Length: 311
Image 1 (cartoon, one colour):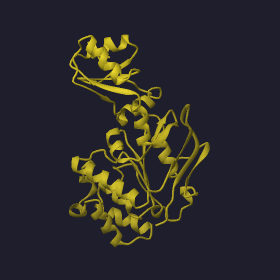
Image 2 (spheres, one colour; image 1 turned 90 degrees about the vertical axis):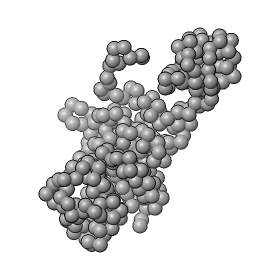
Image 3 (spheres, one colour; image 1 turned 60 degrees about the vertical axis):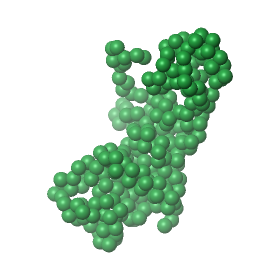
Image 4 (tube, one colour; image 1 turned 180 degrees about the vertical axis):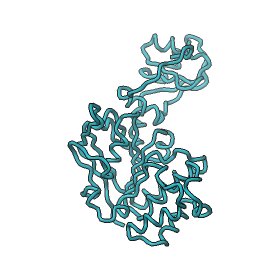
């Protein structure tokens, strides 16, 4: 299997008066699971459609191993993709759907049965796709994406509709595909799944990449200089530490996150004011915190805080 990469450079596209892509650029490298995240309207789906030759752009390029998707003779042997889990004809069995795809790509029935097994659909392969649950349709879409044994795999929201067993299976599958040297691009709004699966993260915002870095580096940068304090007196602790110049945010019900003061100083201040606390430790940021910070200015539709909910 050849090792190919996706190189997206300066994509620009409008839908009427809406600027969907405004210089989108990033690379998806072999042997790496690259997460692709961003708020609604950020350009994720449009970018994936452009890579697959489904949408044209006004400027920029999206290349598969140096070539546009449309120039590939047997595209499924180069790129496997899942963009819409509802795509199979509802009256066709899963196996017949895959056989039809295989025939168009010069692939064998033996390969069809192999990907059915990989996707965990052996027992239901002859059932009509119209009777499949969303999770089963996702598995069928994965089977189709892997049909050509491609060096590049692109999946749009593959965790949608998956039960806990399916989510565990998907995580393992994505890691194993990258371990085989494939370039894997996964779009997801579930940051917990991206953090547990992706090595690299591209965050889209208003049509461009606002972050493009290793996941570990993004989390380390967001964690640096921040201290977690576990206390049952969050309001009092916040007041004391804020008066000393700290920036304090509430993480969970009994934990506050403090920036601007070292741990030793925090302990001294809380003891001096008789504020009870049970733990002071280095804060470990989640990828969701990183994501929310990166996309703060790129969210198109933001809900108001409900009345009575603390800000």
